[in-house]
Structures are given as structure tokens and as C-alpha cells.
Amino acid sequence: MGFEFSVIFESLPPLLEGAKLTWIITLAGISGGMAIGILAGLGRIAGTAYLGDEPHGTSKQICFLTRYFSAGFVESIRGTPIIVQAMFLYFAFPMLIRSLPNVDQFRMEAMTAAVITIMVNAGAYIAEIVRGSVISVHKGLVEAGLSLGISRYQLIRYVIGPIALRRMIPPLGNQFIISLKDTSLFIVIGVGELTRQGQEIMASNFRALEIWLTVAIMYLIMTTVLATTLRHFERKMKIF
Amino acid sequence: MANIIEMKNVCKSYGDTEVLHNIDFSVAEGEVVVIIGPSGSGKSTLIRCINCLEMISSGELIVDTIRIPAERKRVRQIRLEVGMVFQQFNLFPHMSALENVAFGPRKARSMKAGEAEDIAGELLAKVGLDEFKEKLPGELSGGQQQRVAIARALAVNPKVMLFDEPTSALDPEMIGEVLDVMKSIAKDSGMTMVVVTHEMGFASQVGDRLIFMDEGIIVEEGEPSIVMKNPKSERLKDFLGHVKHH
Image (cartoon, rainbow over all chains, first blue to last red; front, side):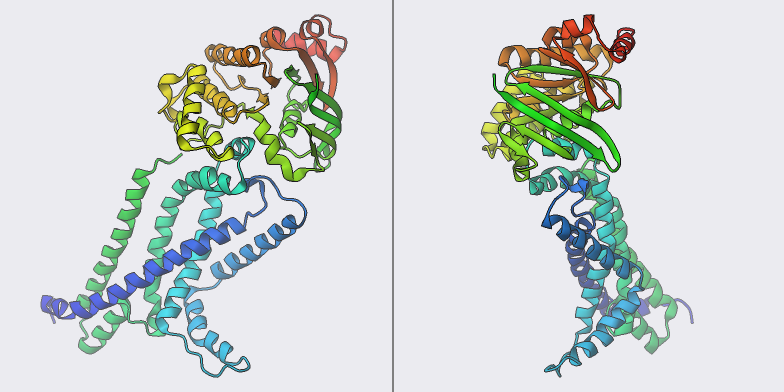
């Protein structure tokens, strides 16, 4: 059984279908992950001097709760394997919902579970990236902003945000690539992404070498696209 | 003249460490007050309390009739009336000199972009940096950066300017250009100024009053040349001895 290029050509259409799903899950997942990450990342430092004046009165209590809730979210997601999270969301979560009174029909699409898993998982890691970048912004710049009499929103939007964003790009690139590769784990919940497509073709023709080589190259192309896009942004923005 | 800044029995602590002890301090409108003292004496903390970058722990602070802590919600109003210049300049690194100066009027005073940039352009010209409008802070010398920082603080049109060791981070040959700008602000616009500095020449030429602080209290105060010539306390004599040798 030598290396057969024809095997690769035959399996390209289903593999490309899989790559398309991988791409969709990744892009939807990291977009949602960015939103969750920014909220949870800022949440972890809510009410600290990194984000301007320290609050007093009731807002101090609210910030305290926000910090603990955000930290709890980040730690519980970082502390459990993504494959367990995917299985929980796909198999256990619907059972939990169905056990509620007045609910007897509830199913979760595998694709939905996959996207949510990436969103939440990437969100937790991005939260740490956001927090790290924000606390690295020089305290004097925050004070300079405050001393001009701008609001907290303006301080974050125009001073802290732009400086922190530039520092986030290299670690974000890392996380985006990890998230893309993590989509291969959704083979366990039956999403027809690239790895699963490869596995299925392999099971019917036993051409492991050709199939896995092609699958690996397809992942490599996709991660290269992500990395190149981010490097493009990085070059456009000076790091301060 | 009416006092624009008043501190009544103000204390400031960090945890168990009290760094300002029962300070009574006031600044009249148009007055230039120079604060000197050894490091750790509380002079920076004192002026940072005025624009509430540090919140006083007890006592009362009144800035332009706004009372702290009673009117804590109006801290931003105080900051609009009180500009600040920092030792490390703290220019926004991602904005050009012009954008740095236009930022305050644009965002804090809600001016139109064009209007804010006109003001910024005028102020940059006033501090002698007309040709450096488009430069980023990283492309400017320390003295130029500090002059941009002064223009930035002035752009919000404050009634009071605070200077926290504005020349301490500068190379010796750049100190003069910054002091000259500060002198012209004091002389031309009659700006109320509180200046923490070690520049004794500036203190005697421009200052209306000199305050010597040590260990969180005001030890001596008065007309600058008199205080400098006739220090009453051993601590001030000792301090002046050290300053003069530099």
C-alpha cells in the first residue's frame, strides 16, 4: 500500500466540508469568547485602581461581588478539561433542563454545544489576557486621564483600552490558535468538523497516512491564516 | 482674596501608616505656593489629595466650594478646575502631542474636535512646540514631553494647576525650558499654582509662599526668600544645606 495521491483528491470534498465547520465554530467561538473575555477580564479587576477611582458605598459591594463572580468563572473553566465541558454541555445539560418541572422536550444541537464550549472556554482564557494587559498599563497614565476630569467610561475607552489592546494581540493569537485546534475535540459529540470527517473517511478506506497528513495540512493552513491576520494587526498598531 | 483650596485637619493613611497628620492648609486665588521637603515627607501626597487622586482619610477638603468627603460624587468637577502635571509626564503614548492636548477639551469639556484642536494648537505654540504637533511622546525629549503635559493640563481651562516635581525626571539642560513655561503661566495668566519642587530658584522668584514639610506635617511656611534665609527649625536648616549643595 504505497502513497496514493488519488486518495487525497477523492477525500477532499468531505474534508473541506469539515474544515468549513471547523472554521465556523472557531470564528463564532472566538467572537463570543472575546465578548465574554472582556467582560470577565474587566470584572476581575472591577473597582480596583487599575480602572480609575476606587468606588465607595454600594458600588464598592457590587464591584466586590463582580470580582468574585468573574474569578469563579475563570477558575472553574480553566480548571476543567474542555472535553469534559463539551460532554457536560451536550449530554448532561439537556438532562438537567429536562428534569425541570414543565419541561419535557429539550435537545441541544451538537453544533450549538460546540460553539458555546469554545466561547466559554476561550472566554475564560481571554479574560486573563485582558486582565493582564489592563493591569500592565502604567498607573501614571490612568492618573493623567483622571486628572483631566474624564469619566470612567472615557478613561477605559480612550486611554486604558487602546494601550491594553495592543499588548493583548500576541497572547490573543496564541489563544485563537488553541481554540481552533480545540474544535477537533468535538469529534466526541459528533460534530462533523475536520477531524471527524478525516476519522470517518479513514474508517472506510483505511488510508491513514494520506488522510491524516491532509487533515494536518488543512489545520496548518487555517492556523497560519489566523496567525498572519493577527500579525498584520500587530504591525499596524505600535506597541507602547 | 478668597481661598480656592482649603484643607481642614486633613489626615491621610495607607493602612496603619499615617502619612499626613492633621494638615491645615489653604491657597488663595492667584497664589503660587511652593512645597519643599525631603522624600517621604508627604508633599506629593498632599497635592495628590487636592485633586482626589488620593482620597483624604479624615478632615475636610474644599476646592472651589466643593466639599470632600461630603460631595464625593463631584470629584470630576474638582478635576476640571484643577489641572495636574506629573514628574513622569504621563503623556498618552498612543496619541500625538496635539491629540494629547486636545483630548481634555474634547472629552472632559465635550468640545467639537476642530475647536479642541484649535485650543491645543494655540497652547502648544505657547509652550514653544508649534512644530512638534504631530510627534508621538516617544519621539520627544523629556523637556518637550513635560511642556506638552503642561499644555494638556491647561487645555481643560483649570482654575488651579498642581505640579508634582515637574523637573525631577529631567536632564539638567532641560529643566530651564520647563521652569520658564511655568514662570510664564504664573506671571501672564495669574494662575493659582501649587508646586512641589526642589528648584529653590523657582521658589524664590515665582513663589508667593514657601511651605516646608517633613514627616507628614507642615513645619514652616512664609515668604520664600525669608523662609530660605532664616530657617527656624533644625530640619529646614538641614534640608536647605542638602539642596544648596546640588
